[in-house]
Length: 307
Ligand SMILES: [Zn+2]
Image (cartoon, rainbow, N blue to C red; front, top):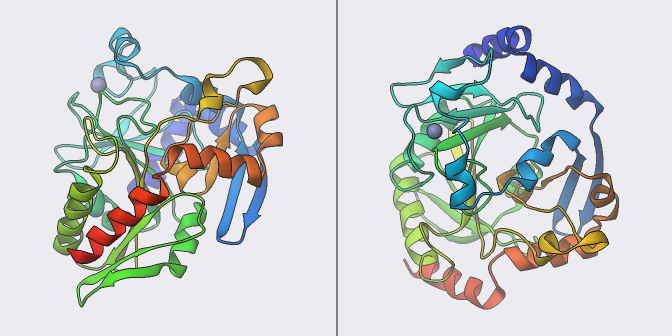
């Protein structure tokens, strides 16, 4: 963890873009929307308009220089070596007081296959942080360059709410659980055994691949944290990137394009009008359009329990 603290201290001195935006973060506003199964914390953060509104279609992606490639880093940005494959950078467009990006060194697409174990290892190396992954069609702003992200541990409401998970299946290795009445469908995997988690994750992915859009991989958001030697994985399967209101015109438009952080309960809203009008009824309607439908969900749960 010390290496990340040091990176932050240095980058806030030497990387002007980051320094400006972390300073600006102290001015963001919050409000909380409570429902029987949990809570959403809304953050009004105008600087995030770039990420929320960014086009992620292949043509737009191909036309811009990749901001995660070492050759294109902005002036003053420096990272730390995690291992031969990954580097850790301060995210210059933060949602949290410490927001890090963990890209691969080489330019290769956002795919979780073969990398879930890396995610568990990063979470184990940095237990004070929470690791998250946005699928290529599920909120990643760089679907062409593989990356995880880190947030300070304990900020996302799901981390606390996971303590109330209802068990779907359990054995001596660990447990798969869920939360009902949570406004979005979620699986939790909970275990201290890396190999078991990897095999269960792959099994869940195989089932999901038959029920939700899966080109190039099942649409999902993933959040992983390790506390006291045990990992918890929150897996949010989804059927859509954005609600229809995102594409509406004028006052009907809502800039809501959620990724892992939002599915984890922290909703980042770059426009004041959205921040003000997003209340429980509207949030329920928006998440309904994105999360897996009830019928598919029941079928997926049945198959996972049978595995
Ligand atoms: Zn790249």
